[in-house]
Length: 79
Length: 150
Image 1: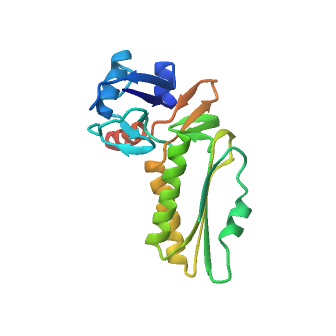
Image 2: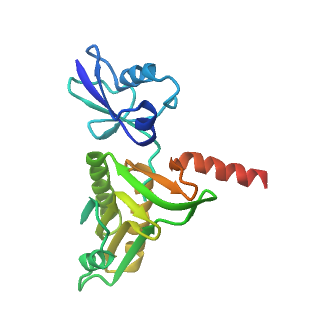
């Protein structure tokens, strides 16, 4: 199944893109998506960044569905 | 109640007027602005970016929580995105309630939760021409380390 990983701010700069399409096997989790991205750029991401699935914060164990939008969230700095 | 991410200057007076009513005896305005020094470095400007859909959702949830928790306070929040100059308002929170305690509490709740949960990021521009994404978790560590080394 295909999912899209979104990157923002420093993570997007480091990886040189703000969106990565991923092909994952069914039953894959948000953590699996993170691991795939990490394999593209090992040192670019902290060990346990915040994750969101379809615009809601999610745990790494969150099971994905086809078409899901997984966001890797850098430390937020609004205000 | 209303929350928005905006790409233009925030009209502070308009937000104050929006929550004012005959039954509200107290209105509180919080205005967050771009300051000229951060973490010891001279700042010339700032750019804000967001995971827009999620940021809108989180901001709306926070305003709802603030209203529910603090006596049905009226809450209006605008956060600005894009390029900001020194002194520009990046966030304005207007709260109102028949009594001041709830209006103050709701205002404080919104800014603290916003800083914790809403996926917005800012990149500072420094006097020497460099730019850097702000990482509040790293700054907190710096502050703690500075405290310890005193």
